[in-house]
Amino acid sequence: MEWKDHAATLAATATPPGSRWREPIATTPRHTFVPRWWAKTRDGWVLRDGDSDHDRWLAAAYRDWTLVTRVGSRHADHAEPGTRAEGSPTSSSTLPGLIAQMFRHASIGDRCTVLDVGTGSGYGTAVLCNRLGAARVTSIDVDPYLNEAAAARLEKNGYKPRIFTGDATGPLDWEGDRIVATVSVRPVPPSWLAALKTGGRLATTITGTSLILTADKQEDGGAVGRVEYDRAGFMRARAGADYPVRDQSLFERASVEEGENIERSRYPVLDVVNAWDVGTMLELIAPGIEHRYITDDNSGDRVSLMAHPDGSWARAEERDGMVTVHQSGPRRLWSYLDAVRDRWIRHGELPFRGARATITQEGVIILRRGNWTATIGQ
Image (cartoon, rainbow, N blue to C red):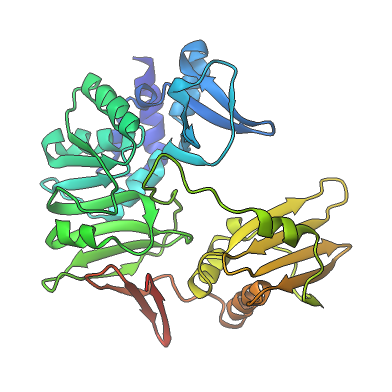
């Protein structure tokens, strides 16, 4: 019975009063879906085992935060005690507050059939089953083991939804009312539009941004919706066991080389990844930029690196309050960032929140707000 008190406290934190998702979260034993996880420490990803520390297990499972269950191709379930993992997270149990947030944006009614994109640990699927009944819930993930483990844990909790393995951005053997994704995509997969019934709704995030996009399917096969006045970030959808290995040589050059263009910046060095709105606008202007951010705890110096697959790179160094920017390649990446900050200061906001969205049958997203327009996925 101990977990129920924790779950009730979690539900009160993760949902507002009156939410239809409060009771499902309060009565779903999250700890059973995450018996082991990877914790990020200064020394890298460290394995946590719930069976070896019951109090830590309950504290972690019933806190409104994300628990990483897979790093690279290594799942916590398969790791030996005391081991560490290297790489980027590839699966997790999403924080319950964000799950409820995405379900709310999807406007899920009690009689809706729902496709849960990104089975992961199975916890979000369980919350859906708790409210709707398993017969109305289908879940998909690209990873066979994730689905196998999630199905077993769901069944132990009394749920047997349909779960299938496959690339969620490819053809779908499903038709229904709602699609909710806890992975990010760019563009919207055409198969999602084909699978939704007319009038059905999708709720997803756009890769590389903090945009939550909701849209309702139209009779012509496209969809119309908006960017919500909200934000979220999910791992991007993957088609294999891990994300493709990225060439780091451009970052190595950016770290040490003199730029073709060197100038002072009027703005301080910025950790773009954690500056969600600025990073989102930059991604809409120049998609595909990768970022690194380095700080010196002793001196307070900061360095920001940017690199793009087209060969462009930038390095901004802030020392003693002075910022020097080096840029090379076909485009000036830091200049794009400064242009975003100029716009923010000039207008007091960036234009994408609340933008109207039109999605073509091919999944191309067109955002409009006032005189501003952006096209995603062409």
